[in-house]
Length: 354
Image 1 (cartoon, rainbow, N blue to C red):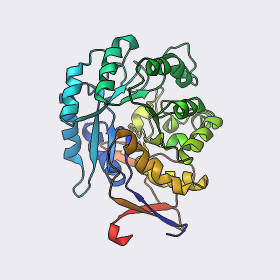
Image 2: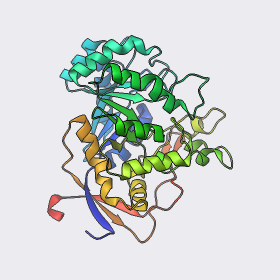
Image 3: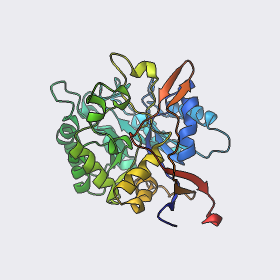
């Protein structure tokens, strides 16, 4: 391959919001076109809290995957203080449940049913360690007295580190990390902790949604931080460290819900995320590390095989044209704008073509 072409194994998305109903049916094709598997977030209304909920949601997802596309939704349960270990075991035994998601109550979209008192879930987490099922954490405290830009670092100190000292065998993914604090903690944390990093947190800092006016389509949780933190994330993923892998946290919201006095948190990146990432890794002179980040490190941590399919990337001489909006009924969803032209196209290729 030339410097303008390269091939990687088909990627996975280890943190994805598909929503439900009409939204699910409209956005699923974008993820299915780009990824072989995805960890599906459970924060629906009502949330996916039991194995039966996960079975039903998985069926609804499978029903709207476009014909000819191979896409495997990996289901998660929404951890609550009422979660039953017997139900977790059933989900694992059936091959339905891949992980559990911990939302501190009030931390993000539809997290009202999340954990309020962490001491009440320790027995559940100890059981998860026994059956070797990962815990996925939204790593922010929700105390109103803690500055929103400090909530990830405080979560590590107050919640995550004590938890890992108490149950060191529990495999944990710190989701959508945004700070150098989290990067450093994961690097030093031993083999049972890893982290997902989003596409948008590699591209935007807090100026994107605050400087020159409020820009709601760059507002997400955790919020993007200072430039020093963005560069720490870039350094981590472009280093090739296997503790970091892609979780897009692609989260569609209707424009009507984003563009108001209390806009929803979430950025929709599934449409153009791989072209964005190729740009980022090229910008860091690390294109050879892209495959590890999007295709290899995640399966390794989840103890799953790497995909056999292949994607061929090609750098074009003219910018790609991605849609700015996706129509959903009478409203629309805005696609992430990285703020620069995208030149990296890609297509599925057969092994015989390599």
